Length: 149
Image (cartoon, rainbow, N blue to C red; front, side, top):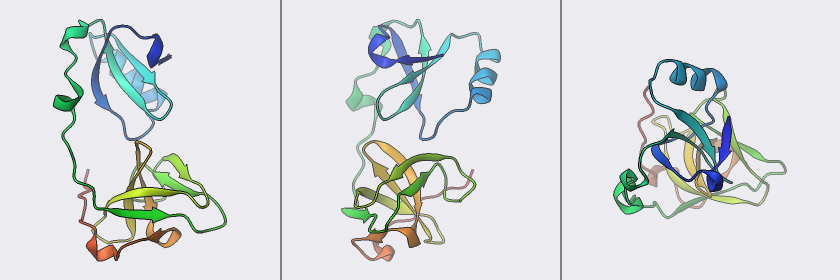
């Protein structure tokens, strides 16, 4: 069951998913745990939550998420159709969002081969194939993000 986060009064954020969780993954987690789990969905993100813990145990946002430095780089879709954002830098990975024609996103880094760029599109992280977008800096300026499993 997916809950709207505004309807959930007490939950403890366990981790943020950069990709959509499958029903099979969710069922496996629930069946292998003595905790109560639920998916909590906001407008942009799906989060896995442990229900029933005291609200006081939820860390302050500034403590929970480390600050990251932006690259100042932006990707722009100057093509004629939307570009897929994927959960990993390959075409077999799940599509997590789309970068519409004319839209832009913040570039966070690249894979080691330099053919995929990780982006932040309004809070959704994903990978775009470099040949499908325009980057406002040289790709060499982006740092390499380790994507080994």
